[in-house]
Length: 114
Length: 417
Image (cartoon, rainbow over all chains, first blue to last red; front, top):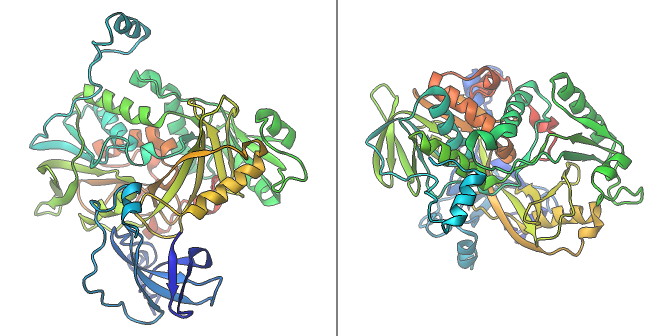
């Protein structure tokens, strides 16, 4: 279970209080009725699904109820940062998402969790 | 390939089991193949087998980063059924179920397909309406599925608690008698053996790092951890890592990868005769031939490639199992694991051509790909050989997310996703 920092409540709470909200920083087109099927597909369905750094939305449903964004590593599940909705993607100097060498097995994950 | 039979077992027993040959060979990669299949799970190995057997294309390599069947093929709960709601889904899963029925004979390999019945519990009015809709749709499509009263459900599966005072009372169940389980490793090994026998190269411990393209944008081969390997066609079937592989060819696919967990108990004497699923309280359970209870849990809510999953997911499932089957309350769980599933927005698979010439994809089987293995592999081979989908898989194309012709099993699936 993840431990997630809510930037509004300013504390870490258990994942049970949160709901995942999909990818962050996807802007809904302002002219949604005019865009082509290709553009709608790209906006609505297509995702990068990265192995490594992901920017995603969370909602603190059983807390303050607010949406915020977070940067996380999808291999180690470790959070790099969480920040308020509307703020730009943070610079993350020096972060290096885990590689398969460091995290491939359950045992390896346990070993590097600390 | 030397055939397996009762006589072979007897012959080897008499000579100290010294005559068994390797099930498949692992040759050095050629410089170029007609077809490279990325991903050595059941779907990829099966596609290689059907390419060789049905389409006469034997200059084929299956490239696998780890070991055969080490991904989701070896990580699932082995449930087989075809009682889906929509025509496109019923077509492909029923095609698959029919292939399961003869697969051991076809491959000369015991995949231990056991049609012990898959029973889905109904707990409320919505469940009952939804399951009856499935039953009618299935029967109109020629697929067996029947409605049971709670008493009939109890007769079929005696450990079930049907008391009106139960925490999750049961008002009926849907039963597909031809559904059941199979041995997951044997499926990968059986296909690998049969494909290798027809000349397919099976290359393990070989990671695809890039996809090389020609001047017209068409694929020309893959860069791997063992060097460049040329290919006239590339077929991607890498389950949870499909997005990663497809991004090497600059193709975005509508997938998100999440861990799905399963766990097994300590082994016990035969006590559980069928497969039981409960959509509403999210639990599914069967007993393996080794005696372990095989229990499937849910997915995590966030994208992850960690192959672990959160503890709260499996405790939720075990809570439900203990309520449905009070006799299992003191059973110990032995092992837990996660597999990375690739899920589409409509929870139906994608199998089809891509915007890149000669690149084909088989993805999005999500949390239910094992049951589809023979059917998916069979139709994927047709797609690779002919360059266009088989009519049974014609609805599963990648461009349905552009045209809007979704196959919305997400809302109507008979299984909890």
